[in-house]
Length: 231
Image (cartoon, rainbow, N blue to C red; front, side, top):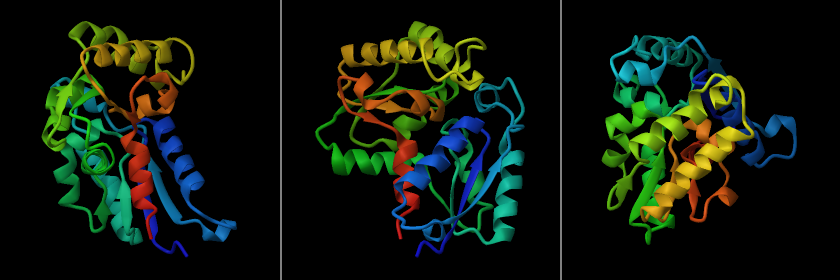
């Protein structure tokens, strides 16, 4: 069972990569070690910052990710995922080079909304400024209104929770103020009428949990785990 080869193109950040693989292990139905998938993980933390690249303030991550894709092509990977939503901005460039199925977090998220939460008409997205600026959620999520935190909340709550060197998730902090800031940002979206919150950054999915929100919380990363482990 579970004979296909799965790839994880990671390092953006490393903890999100580890979390993704951990969830894959937990959600794969097995009775012994040999029942698990063979998984190829390239956690390249040297990939340039995706938000900076999108905003024109840093180099492109694409050449680095294409290196991982080339390796996985050689290894005969069947399916793969990139646990970094901001990097999906360049998704078509990856698909053009991949000789395997590369799962898209946004299409999986849209399908889940339509099939499982059809009553939701306004979704609140917590994501990096880079992802937000691309309006990628707006493009992929059909038949719903997508809203974001205020400019102030985006910088002082969402980005601070992700990037701040002392309390941010990318600095290895997964408890305390970073969670409080994200809860406050989520509550702000709910106050604007959001009836569903999307953890639109893999780091946010590391710390924000359903019990933190008064409305359904969707983690696209977990949805792609469930998709990629299907027989």
